[in-house]
Image 1 (spheres, helix red, strand yellow):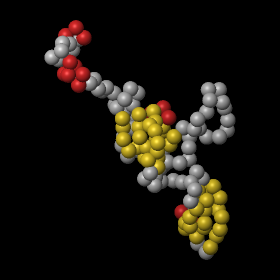
Image 2: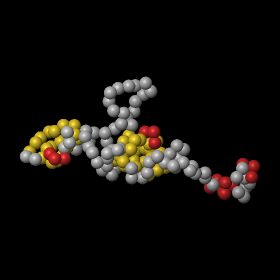
Image 3: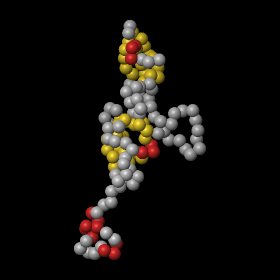
Image 4: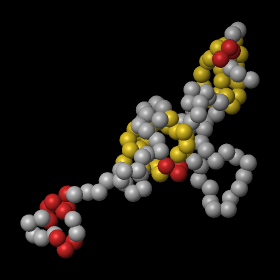
Amino acid sequence: MRPSEVTADTTLKAYTHVKLFNKTHRFKVGDVVRISKYKSVFEKGYTPNWSCELFKITKIRITNPVTYLLEDMKGSPVLGGFYDQELQIAKHPDVYLVEKILRRKKNKVYVKWLGLNENSWIAKDNIVL
């Protein structure tokens, strides 16, 4: 509907007619992603540009540009929305990095996970060197 065709009778119809984008989304609900770490324009370094923590996409907001709502793996929501340029799909979402082995007992080890706050006991067979 062109602006010249809008009258007092058709204002409600023109107002409720919302154009939706037919663009396909880069991610789907339920995808496991990583968030980019903030760096300024010319900042370089040897540290990784993506977080170690994994997040799950819970909702896709149809905005211009599209934004995604996330929750961490425990289920608590992350405040704010993220653009698709700030997200990256985790290729191996079930693999976690071990920062340090704290204790050993028989066939179990107590490990500190990289990027996570909890330490836990796991079997020695589950560690890949």
